[in-house]
Amino acid sequence: AQKVTQAQTEISVVEKEDVTLDCVYETRDTTYYLFWYKQPPSGELVFLIRRNSFDEQNEISGRYSWNFQKSTSSFNFTITASQVVDSAVYFCALSVRRRALTFGSGTRLQVQP
Amino acid sequence: DAGVTQSPTHLIKTRGQQVTLRCSPKSGHDTVSWYQQALGQGPQFIFQYYEEEERQRGNFPDRFSGHQFPNYSSELNVNALLLGDSALYLCASTPNVAGGPGETQYFGPGTRLLVL
Image 1 (cartoon, chains in turn blue, orange):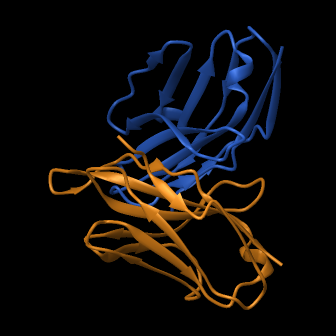
Image 2 (cartoon, one colour; image 1 turned 135 degrees about the vertical axis):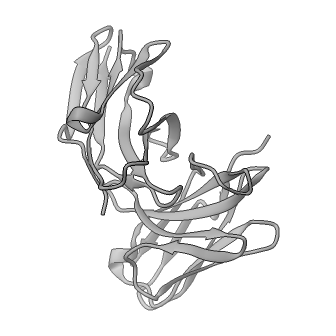
């Protein structure tokens, strides 16, 4: 069985601060995919990034960056110079064999102006 | 290019009733998955359909059933509604990659179901 843990329930920062959202996962499969999704108040889950288990290269996309470490089973997400529009609930998720996504409980990020 | 669409957006039912939710996948996507998201929690997987067959099922009772049509659209049916079925129901579609489901699921806006 798969498990995803997001220990941070809620984070509040002031605009322009950097913030890191933690994600720890568990799986016995050697081939798996990790994801981050953003859920704004409207409710729709917006796909941000996908990583496969064989690619530990970190990725940067604008103000977003992701750090994948198999040794600690972590897939952390950093927002640099946060903005009010970043306020949302962020979910980390795991899938194996292209099947169901197992989600963490989410981290609510509030960016204050 | 339209994204994943779901209908209705909101629904109010009473206990014991039955409900049908609908989902149309993105163009070029042939796999549809359904999730239930209770307030303040992460989405929970209900089931996944591919080639009109249920490919995988989560830990939900038989009251939850589904169907996929030849045009890849899908329905989620819930019978004998309980108060605890109140949630946001999310549909996700996956593109076809090399003859099978791809890795990334793209979500629709969801249907908010309230059971009174």
